[in-house]
Length: 263
Image (tube, rainbow, N blue to C red; front, side):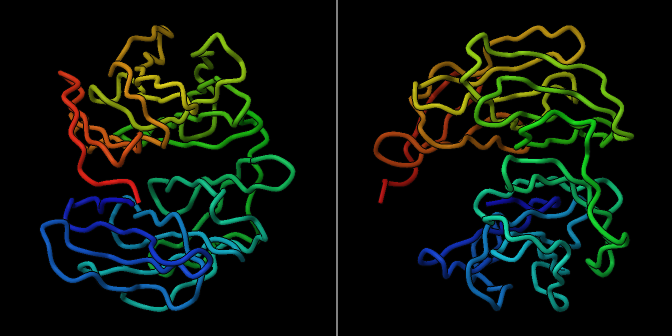
């Protein structure tokens, strides 16, 4: 699921395997609206201005215009690819366009210019970002959209920090065990730290990286999680899938509550 920039709507994919649709629903309650009309949609994500939602499908990345929580026009195939949409990770740029990883022989980073008003690609093709680390999976923009944190794939415990112009600022190995990959979650403290989670089932907590000094500190203690963690917009809570259901934990005192049973 993904929250709209104005915190009013949530977009998510739901349905039987292979027949998922993307829905948008007010966060304070109300009926959900189906915004897709084909089968097998996944990983919806709002653009920074809330005017589009990008999502993955078996044939590539689609972009649909949105207005006040409703679909405002037809969806456009912005990037054609046979990649599995369940293995497609993306991040919007500040002024239209996407950074994303396409899963071919290995996850590879691309940049695709997109017209924010139409969802149409503005370039002839997606540009492969050869300067980024190999095996790229996760992207997270700083609050000012001037820097992007990039996490490696299944066999990488590195986080790289780049300027928006793709100039590398820093690269940090955040875990001494090279087989442990990391999921870059978000920037906190006004963009002074990057929060990440190890992608394993060993019950690790969350860590915070200072991208300037490389210092790592514990952000949330052990969670016994076995699913990808999501950070709330204010950084005060996290949600994750653990033994027995879905949980929400406070980042300051690690108070944990189960909010949904595991089905």
